[in-house]
Image (tube, rainbow, N blue to C red; front, side):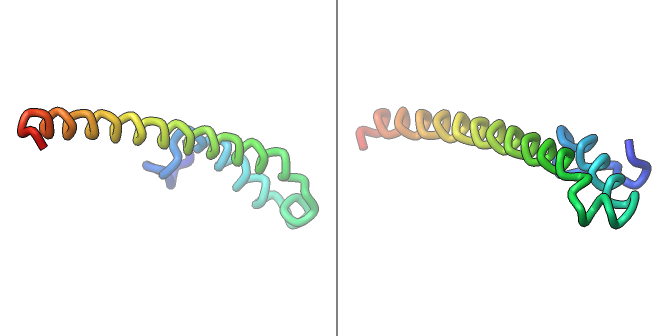
Length: 78
């Protein structure tokens, strides 16, 4: 774990983020001529997966909340 990062917004992708940062720091050639592109694609895949997981969790929670509201509507005959 990187010593300056006690918390990160994307904990599941932290290792890939750190590898990309290191690649970029290792020289201008790597950063500007595509030597880090494979790591960048890995990061994009990781962030996409994380986004889909969060979105599914939010949708499931919204369905649960909607079900509770509909039950209350039935109870109050609305």
